[in-house]
Image (cartoon, rainbow, N blue to C red):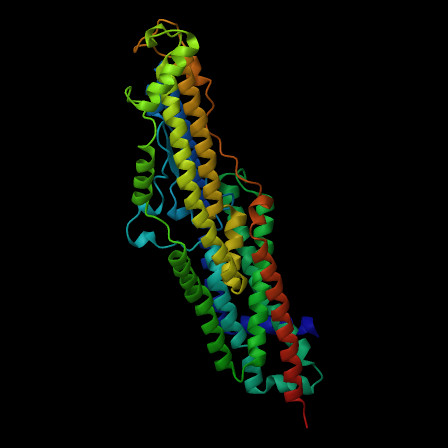
Length: 476
């Protein structure tokens, strides 16, 4: 009986030219969005690889150089796109893609997609996740409200009950039809992405385990939406009231609550502007040693310690270059300043994130958004991980250059001394190692459980609503 009802509902949608046109338009929109986003992702990865190769070539082509000059020349590191950015771009469009690596200062992300675009293009682009999380639920709401509730208003549901079908079976059939439609659209999105990937890069950048996770959590989310739509149709007095209630919930869940919680998080845990953050860091750093100032008190004290260590009275008599030691002192203090200020900033991020997680527990739309970005590698946590790895690389690189400055080369070196090209070629290029997807999703465990709970509650609402409907429609 259930399978018959599912086929009947699908046939009804297919025979209605308006609904068929709507479904066709949605399928085309999802296909185009997924294919376009995948092509854009592949092109972005190619550009990132070319940029990294070009930066490394420029580093090597400089040949022999003084280590401190090379430390100021610096390097560039490129943030690769998330593992499944082709399906969910997350926050990456608002974040920089390039970090400049140099001595005495930590890198600031440059060249985000939004910063290079005009005003209109600064709005979020409709990737596949956007459509699956916002537009497809709207479609399911419309179909559900004009399905089961309309059948009840027209008396067709009462006729089915008289003929022996139970309300629970009818509700189950409508739920499976809606969910099956949602799963079909999800499969279409993935198929379009895989097809484009095959044509452009042959799956070379596709993370299969993350793709499976993406499909599973979105299938669960679509089950929640489908069950909620059927439950509303069962409990509402009419198809119109069911549609109005569902639309109101959709607006609140997708627009009102996320914006309200974002504003609350910014109010309770405000973040400094980039200019204020840099100014505070600069003020703190000025209180420490300055490797470029030979009269700096801390540098003078360290110089005397080195002179005593080598048993000489003049820097000229040292078998090393004290300038490299002074530069590393400057760098070490700057690292402490960065750790302090960036630690405070990251603590604010975490406090905001905890508040948004609490909001997601009562809002499945926010929960799926958080989980999807974590799985696809496009959330803030992945960007902070990239910045942390880039900063560790910067410190290691600058330390190696300062060490060569201090201890490399002949004893009778001068300002014109240069380290060999082989030394610079021996310094490894930056390679970002993204966290494994299991570790990435671990901090979204609460949201995952909330989706499970919402699924149970929605199915329970269907069960109770079906029992209530059967009692009310029972013939006298």
